[in-house]
Length: 293
Image 1 (tube, rainbow, N blue to C red):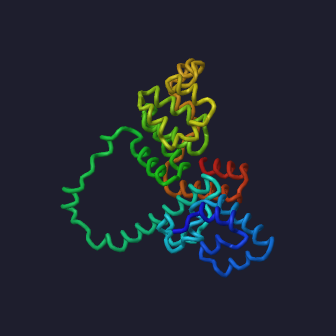
Image 2: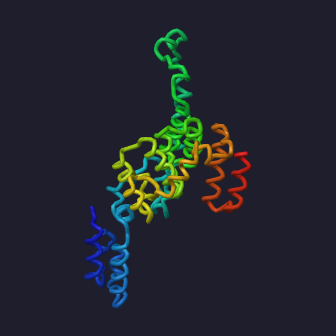
Image 3: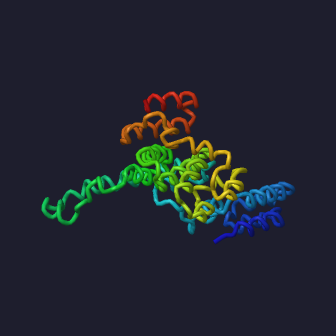
């Protein structure tokens, strides 16, 4: 397997004779470097190119017989450049996960219906506890977790908000809502719901310091004071919290829509159009408000 740094050294010191091209197996191209002055200039350019090139790009170009892309989807095997930012990477990951779910769904429809359990057996082996045995907001919180794992943070926020509306003292929903807002780079809302989770009894502070979802929150200038204050907001917020009998109800004055696949699909399509630059911020906000009623 060819080494990127070794190729750069050969290009720097032996570029005038095409030494690095012989090393990379490009013998025909190497003879071009024997031209006086041109070979040295090309060698310097190649050395800088090797040093600035990522290891994945180098392997994909010069170690094709040994390099295997990380993704399992054929549609992504030709992709040679990494996403330009985290939001684009999350979008591509969501597309990949959606294709996997669609493939699994088709397989279940094709093969799963061949063996259907009898009604008597289903009643005895797959009994489900009645819905009234679960705390309020449990179904919405589980839906939010599914969306969060699929990198669909906007859908997760809608679900977790509904869960906190149904159960304002649900610690897990507040914590998950803070993580979702942090992934969407909305620091103020993330700090608020993380403060609510700690105020309601959350004590696993090490998870806040190490959780990947709070990476954006940890680089904020106010995070150090927030952590020093026991992961609570500044004391000047205390009076405001005492005046709020139900902080979640105060925050969510607009009635949230019922969580259904049609509404969430429309919101996702709007977000995708905005990310691609096909919708402006004003158009996105207007369409979103129209959908949410």
